[in-house]
Structure formats: structure tokens, C-alpha cells
Length: 123
Image (cartoon, rainbow, N blue to C red):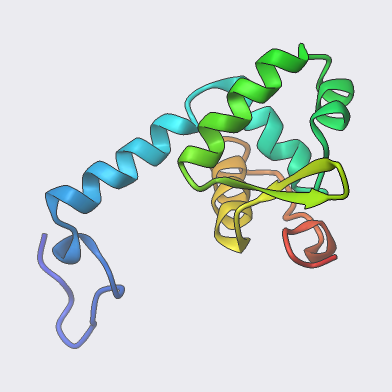
């Protein structure tokens, strides 16, 4: 596809992607391919939560939530923080909330963008 003369493409566009980067991106997208993991990320959009909080909010078994959180941590989509004897899980960074919100708008175009206060790190 030819570019319009005088227009530069977006930085980091397809011409800057190699097979290794494409593989990493595909691996991240794979981590998002399970509804339970997407539900967990959606729960974490509102802020850090314990496994118990996530379990209660989503009605999932504790072992299933823990397993899915491990997968999300391995793919740098969530991070764990110690709060005393408890672990709190949060979105890894702002990029994860932007990715999730963009994907939501893609599948539901009429969806309004959430308020900035619900984004990771805006607490």
C-alpha cells in the first residue's frame, strides 16, 4: 500500500516490526484470549485487588483466579504487591488499561471511554 506523499507513518509501524517482536505481541494477545483472564483485567481496571476480592467479584474459584493471575503476571499484564501479609494484584502499567479499553471499544464501538480515575495508577 502506498503512503500519501508527505505523510509519515506512525512511529513503530509495521515496517519496524520483526518476527521476534511479532511473536512477543502474539504471545501477549494469547494471554488475553481467555474470558476469565479478561474478566480479571476488567476487575483490576478499578484498582488493586486481592485474590479474595477478585474471587468474590467474579464468582470464580480461588484456585482458578490464582492460576489465571499467574499467567497474566508471566505476560506482564498484572503485577503483585505486598500489603502486609496480603498480595494485591494490579494492572502492570497504564499500557494494559489502554490496551483493554481500546479492545473494548473495538468490540463495542458505542462504548464510552471510562473516566481517567478508573485507570491503573490514577488512584
